[in-house]
Length: 332
Image 1 (tube, rainbow, N blue to C red):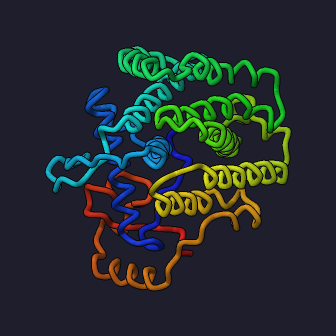
Image 2: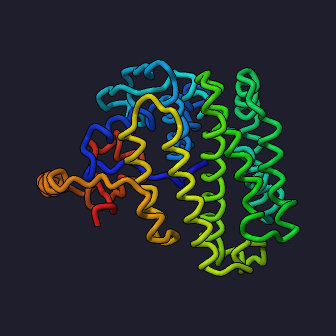
């Protein structure tokens, strides 16, 4: 889980969503640093932030904010969500995700990349052991999920079709999201969250396959798109995106509805090249013409080097370091 989801568009929905998202994003960053060392802060990402946010949405009690700074210790402290169980869960999943990726690269890559993956795997072993220990204490099916992810290589050797190739990733993500219901003690939400995670797992796998197609051809590695058409990918991707949207909306969340809608809207927009018009219609429309006009005036007034050269929808500096400059592609 590293970079599939979008971030809420401040131009479309105002500063409130932006501030709330920053509290989760930077809170996860602070939790990673506190639990697994300062270097772990660099692993903060949108997908794990989304997992933390869903946990907070499902919990019977509102997340507790702590005044703290994020990556810039000289900035003004802001309210961050960094100590709740759902944040610790997202942090542990992030660490285990990295460790599993490194192990997979050590098995499949060659040369410098293979040696680098092995070396980083040894460096992160202690953090991985700590994360697994935490996940075991909260009764997460750690071994089942790890075996599903590591089994991907064996599955791909059978050269499965586009749908079958994503099955193990979908299973792993389904378990990750389903466990949010256990943490929040809302067992009735387990099935819906599992389906939400499965849909997201398929989307992430297919998007990675789409992005890696040229590289896999050069290296003669399996890619399910080598034997599939663009139309088939678009159809399956759109079907899973619609399922992801529907099951997410069916979950019994108690708060943060507008923030989730904002993230869903920008996520659909980010992957619009692989979506049909029907799938794009499933994304919430959050644009407010007055807010767009107001934001354009603000940008013109605050025009600086950061606002011209920083893609703030995708990096940490948009939330803390550079005072909240904004760059959004969903107003076009």
